[in-house]
Length: 187
Image (cartoon, rainbow, N blue to C red):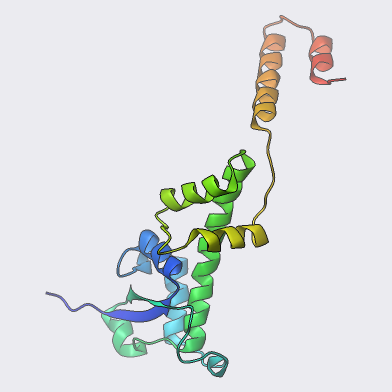
């Protein structure tokens, strides 16, 4: 069996879930050049400038995950990240996971779905059960940072249908240009 080269690091549970869903287990970033470059930069050029700010036990980083690396990188750059780089890694993927959550929950809420159903749908659809990313944490983040705009989908859809119908009726000669213009400008 070939030897497996990995970097093991602590992360928040939902970050691990997000990474595993997107990049497998162990995470393999080679299919995404930007993420691979980011991770290898942390490994190749360790930054410990802020290590003293962070306790050795990173309290919120309660789950261990693995990232696959090449044999070359393993022997040349090592298999550990500094605390500063672990935080940078975690924040990088937290931002991506939260952006995804806020986007989907925001669309569901904008469509008129209650917040609790929107969050439950997001959790179910994207495999974030409460053990990985609990409902209350998502709700709190969405209320603080999400965009909560209501969209009247019925009005928007019927407006587009009217626009298409008027254009087609005008193209077929059923209505005149003047009538089309008048119908388009509601009083």
